[in-house]
Length: 298
Image 1 (cartoon, helix red, strand yellow):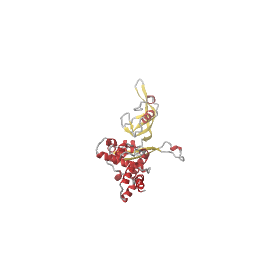
Image 2: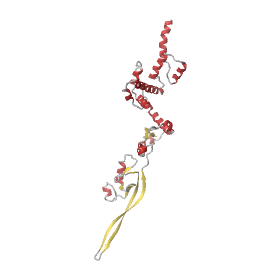
Image 3: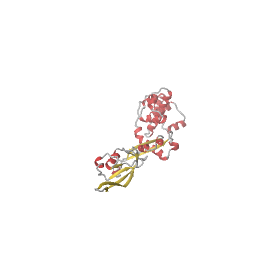
Image 4: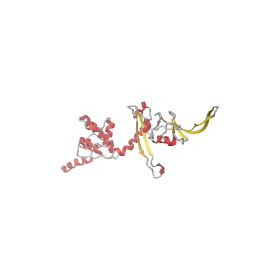
């Protein structure tokens, strides 16, 4: 018997000599029906049996041999004989779906975890194309590279409990996000700091705000009060420093503070500390303020 098959042309006629028997309720499928099941599986880590609805990961390929046997009984008048077909199965090979790996199939890996562990596990991944170099084989075209890590626990701390591989993976993810998140930011130089902060709704500011506060920037912008204004200003300052770190440009925040330092001199030791993070007295401001004094002396 072909079992729970739907391919009557091949199964009911008995034309299929190879069948696939799942390791659940031992239902057998012909090759066309099993191919249809695999095609509709959508890369899931298991196969759903159409008979018992079990999730199966392994199966046997069996070869069916049929032989005709005669049986009958004799009476005084005649002998009644009938022929029956006896099917014998021989296991040809056994196959199983491989377990999904975190490095190549992070989503399926997460789904395949035990429910209790899955509910406590976060999987972070990023997939990028591999750019083929001129001296590489053309067969490398179309390949992808996935950076992924799993974090188990509601308050998993990468600094204290993360492995070096996990730290490296999340570092690589942020490395790949560098050109997409930074971008450019321009504002009018005559605006006050509060106006500049409210105007900065860049993706970098939104990400830094969410990372630093655990809340979206949009929800913070609709809240009034000094606390929310100071929080937005703090995350803007971090965003502006990050935005201009790689480009070695001054940035809005550094220009504002530099102008203030020119008008209000500070100690040399504090000035050296500020220079290390790229904040220094504005030379343009010094030239503009000293020029009138020179003219007056003359």
